Length: 151
Image 1 (cartoon, rainbow, N blue to C red):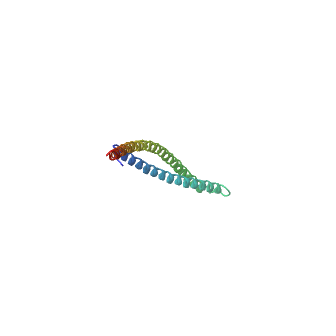
Image 2: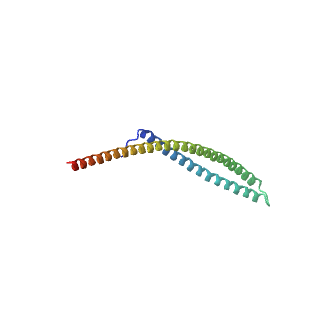
Image 3: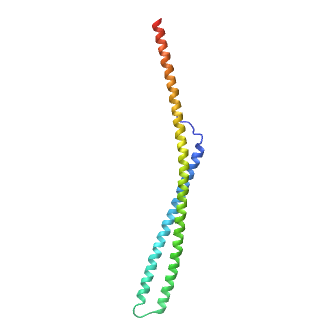
């Protein structure tokens, strides 16, 4: 027999909080993965520019091309620095959201345990009541059979 758990609305709320936090964490982690991919692309671009500048420094020097290459390299390095900050910020957000999610899941588990204990208590009470009814039935049958033997 299932009984309505008195704290069911609270458990439902905690469950919805956990689900919302899981979604938020997934969004942060997706943004983090995208930021890390962008960072990797920028780092590859930086390496390519460094290699290009090194090539241009061999042989006949084109100072204008070298200056332009170095300017592009500085811009890319600044983008790399900014992207690293973004990635670190997203990592911190993910860690904080993960901590928040763990706490919410623990709160939800506590209520689920309370619900299980309440159901177990109800089941035990029901089993005791059924046992008493069965005992009463056996006693009644015994009395009837005894009365029939005496009559």
